[in-house]
Length: 290
Image (cartoon, rainbow, N blue to C red; front, side, top):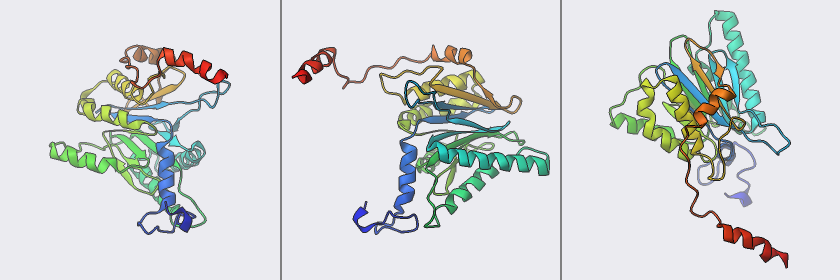
C-alpha cells in the first residue's frame, strides 16, 4: 500500500493510485468488527447484533445503543468511536424535541452524521471514525428506516438490481452512512466480520419482509446472524441481542426468555469441510510432546 512512500501518514494525502489510504483503513476496521444486521417490514424494524467478550471473566460488550424512543444504532468496529457518535446523535434528538416538540427524522440525522464523518477526512490532524453503524427507527411520517454507516459500496449495485426487477422504493427506505461521509438506503443490511453470508441470506428473502410479522422478522434476523458464525459457534441469549421498533411500540429489546424461543427454531449448521478430525486432534499432543 505504498507504505515506503508514506502515503498513509494522514487522511488528506492521495496515493498514486487515487486512494486515500487512511479512509480505507477505517473501512477495514468495520469489516473486522462484530456482525450486526437490520431489516424492516411495513410495520416494524428489527436490529440484531452479535456480542463478544474480551475473556471468560468479562461481560459481553453491548453493540446496540438506544438513541431515542424511535431510533437506535448497531455498531461494528471501534466501540469508543461509536460512543462519541451515539452521544452526538442523542444530543441532536434531544435538541430537536426541545425546539420542535417532535422526534427527529431518521434520514435527517443520518445525513448530519454523514457530514460529520466526512469532515474528519479533510484535516491532517484528524482521522476518520473507525466504526460502521446501522441506524434503524420509525419517524413521525410512519417510515421504517434501516441506515448503515460502514465500509462497502454494495448497496448501489443492489438498488440497480432491484430496479431491473421492477422493485420500487415505497416509503422511507433503509439508509447507510460510511466513514468517508457517504450514506445509502436499504431494505435490509448486514455489516461487520463474516457479514457476506448474512447479506446473501437477506438478498434471498428480503422480498417477503414487507408483509412479514414482527415474529417473522425476528426469526429472519436470527437466521441471518447465525450465518455469520463459524461452525463451532452457536447463538445464545448471552452473545446476541435483538431490538424491535414500530410506530406504536417504541424501542424494545427482546428479553432472554423470548429470544430463546427463536433460537430454538434456528436451522442447524453443517460442520465445515476443513474441520480437523478427531484422529488428527488426538495425534497433535503426541507430535509436540517430544
